[in-house]
Each structure stands twice: as C-alpha cells, then as structure tokens.
Length: 279
Image (cartoon, rainbow, N blue to C red; front, side, top):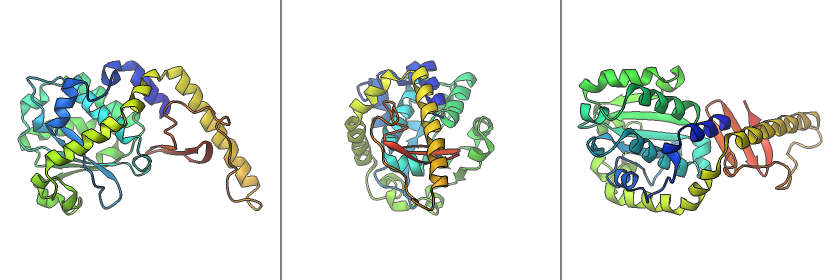
C-alpha cells in the first residue's frame, strides 16, 4: 500500500504539489462546502467527510481542482491516528447535481481517481452514503461503482433524504442545514483551521520519493515478520514486544504514519519499533 501511495504521488504531481489553503481554487471549493470534515465523529468513532457536489461550479473548476480538494482533505485526516485505524465515513449531499458537474471529468480521469483512491491511498473507506441522488445521475453512479472492488461497492448506501440517513449517521453531528445543530459555515471554518494546523507536515510530504518508500516498506515488513517470529517463540516468557530506539527502523517522512497506517487488507502498527502486523 505504501509503495502504491508513493507511486501515486510521483505519477500525479498535479494532485499534490503545494497542497494547502493558499491554492485559491482549492480554498474556494472548501469554503463553499464542496468537501470538508465534520467536527464530531459518528457512532463508530469515525471522522465524517461531508461533500456538497452542487457547490462545485463546473465553469470555474477542473477535475484537478476537485482532486486537489479531496487529497488535501485525505492528507490532513491521515495525520489523525484514529482515522488511520477506524477509517472514514462519507456523506455525499447530491441534491441539485446535474450533468454540468459531471462534465469536468473525462472517463480516463474518473478511472484514475477511483483506482488511486481505493488502491493507493492508505485509508479505509468504511461507509459511503449518497443522499438524494437524482435519478438522471444513476447511470453515472453505476459506472463509477463498477470501477471499484466488490468489497467497496458494498459499502455504498443511497438515501432518499437526510431523515433516512439519520438512521445510520447521527443527526446531531450533521450540519444544521441537514438536520444537525451546528451551521455548515461554522463547521467549515473549524475544518480550515485544522488544515492550516497541518500545513508544515503536508509540505514535508513533497519530498516523498518512490524508491525511498519502497525501501522503507520492505524494511518495515521484514522487521515486522522477524518481530512476530521472535514473539511467537518466546510467548511463554514475554507476551509483550520489546521497545526499540529511533534507529531500529528507518521511518519515512510519513511514518506509515507516525504510528499507524492502515488499509482494508493490512494493519501495520509502528511506534518507533514494530508492535504487530496483520496481513
């Protein structure tokens, strides 16, 4: 997964270069509520990404602008260890979406976006809720789903309205405009502050090189296997893991993140030394 992540950053620099709120297009998309994170977690302890698709003016923004807004959100969230463990819940408000919003994408761009978000982004997409998707967009939705694995397709849920969504996503954590208690613009301002607080960390990711990450990933997996074998053979003597030093494993700038980096098929815990690996 980390190897794919590094490849993605190398192959699509336009998605990641200078990724911050100083990018006027990205900043405008977030301020309009196209994509932002809710301040409260859902019932399963997950952060919730909220998106208003109709907030994106197709005459002003490109597919690259949209991808940059998404990746600024993802990269910021990945600095939260609980997000790495629990994954994310998504709520897509599809009210008033029309063909103009789809027109910014080519089939090739859609394919690349979906493929990379599922296979290269070290993040669990745990629940994906679409609210009030217009019937005219159903064919587009079915095409987009076909690009994903069966496991991820099964995580999509559609809702005729927000009242139906409340059965699965707590009403009170949603924006006031969707039945919650906190106005959307207040939530967006909180999210912008959170993004800004991570600006220096995100800037450091500009130095990621694929060959460096490939070596790091190999070292981590090798060290993890050795750690497990050692732990198994000495289980009766010591059920815990030995602590190490910063020099035991050469960690990358984003330490599979500083503590954990998770995907649906792997969980690697790194706290200076490897604690466990589940494959």
